[in-house]
Length: 409
Image (cartoon, one colour):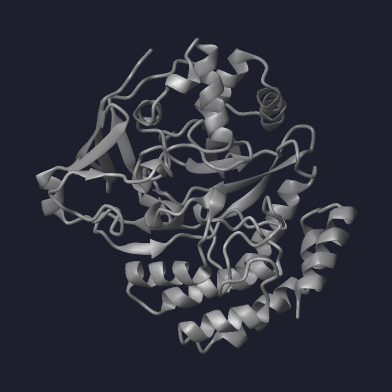
């Protein structure tokens, strides 16, 4: 059993790795301290909860298992955590004895964003470098059913550090050759880092087509998103893929979720779009940040994307310390566990609508609110056209059309 009591945290920006500080575990308490050299660099990687300082930080909440949100963002949740836990179990390790620093050591350099943890605990595994999507989808079923330790390890190598509830893998895609290679490391000239999703056991069979149609609508509604496409397996089944926005070529960008930035428990969130707008303005230092968040709020409300929790919003920081709201992601027809909007709109989560969106706009003196709402609704009125072009099944098209009509006011 490996028990890590100290980790050196570094950050890779513009092709250079800079030591950031140390995480130390003392019994059940975790402490963090920045290195003086990193403080001098002036890169404020977590300005709200871990501002640059010579002090020794400790967390006063068990929200993230004793970690700061900055480091918790590196850990997988949902599918990725399932794979990591089952991989360790298959190797005879007790999950109850795996501490947060141990988990970060397993992530090492393979997580989202730009943070790296050393020493890294390597998990050996053999994977075929060329991906066949149908075969992976079949193995995903085995993973969800809890069978085949060999398959679990292979899938963990493919996507064990990815977040989110749905099964997904990291891959490198060459659009010229239309070829996929597994892995999170650079794969040579012509390849781009992508994430490819697979349906969970509770998803409709056309979930990829639905998400792709939502991607198309969001782009037309003025929302920034990373390039996305449908990948097709040999059987003809399609899978939703999106280019990673935490990578620029072979360089990384620092990524911090709204959950991690503001220490919001996304499973029991009290976050409002107003909190997100305020956070975006403080980081971007421009009123355009208000408009971006408001437009996304309107889309999520009227498109019935209710799984809009705080880990589904993120911010990116470049090597100069400049922040911006990330491209939107995980936009699809969805319901939260309780059926309400996960992120409140002016305090309303059960049935937010125009009234609450306008209250939100008034709070932030956003005078373009009516125009933004109109643009979003005009796009959503054409849902059936988008669904048809993206091969969404008729029953899904009808169900979603009914909800969009019901929500519109």
